[in-house]
Amino acid sequence: MLRSASCLLILVFVATLTSPAQAPSPDYKTNPKFIAATKEARESLNRRMYVFAEDAYKKANKIAEGQDAATLKSLYDLQNDLGKFKDAVATAMQMEAVATSPSAKATAQVNRGISLYRQAGEKNKGDSLQAADAAFKAALETDPKNATAHFLDGKILARLGQTDAAAQQFKECLSCISPNDPSYLRTQRFAENPALSTAKFAPPVQVVALDGTKFNLDAMGGRVVLIDFWATWCGPCKEELPHLKKIAKEFAGQPLVIISISWDADETKWKDFISKNDMTWVQYRDANHQLSKNFGVEAIPHYFTIDADGVLTAEMLGSGSDVEGKLKKLIAKAKARPATTTAVAAAGN
Image (cartoon, rainbow, N blue to C red; front, side, top):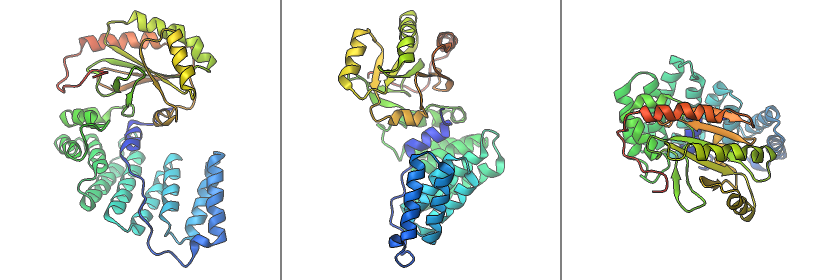
């Protein structure tokens, strides 16, 4: 299912730690036990045996005496995915200790902040939020242009009720990223209204649709968005198609945008199916499933509805979901909504 907005935005901003480790213990990389442990960890991950993978990474890390950056990064990612945020914080501190460049150190500090932020959860645990704020500020002392740290600290400060400070962090983030970045518009909106950053958002989406137009999820101009993950070979998806076509026809001319994201590997078959079935709305083929991974989609058909403010309002898996009913309510609210202060481009511009 969909990860939290903080996690989906972290996937866009956070850089992978690639800096070389400090001088390791003598020949640990050629140690058969280290090689076997890392191999066991990768194989366990492939088999989705995550607890065994964590144990194997811990073993490899012990053999390397905590000096192997790649092992620490893999362990950190896995602990975060498992929800072991306290352990992930400790691992991030080890990553910081072996960092050999300012950028690597800042990345480790950001990772520590991310785990503390996730540890705070939806209940806004004050101690964890304060600790996360300190971690992101430490990262900014190391690397003042770290966009991730600025953005996430803005979210932290907004949750702590420090609106002015949050707005400043979002503005600083804007100065660190290109206007062409998929997250630019969202960051701009948060800078104008920091409280909006505390809501649940889908990952930023910027793709080139089948007809060649650019689709940016944050550039919908106050319209409701329905996202449909599907494939031509998916039986339940085909059963849902008449319903989706009915929605497209019923809400034509209304403040609604539909985007269908296909899992098809065969581009020709995908295009032919769309043409034969008169699927006239926005179409995109997620051949490598990267966009699906960002949304946490592991099964189809899978729907998401997003309101006129860009807030994720519902996630529905499988056929028979009341998509139409949810859209009616969201569209009614969109029509009654005052004009936004941020000038955004419509899809296709």
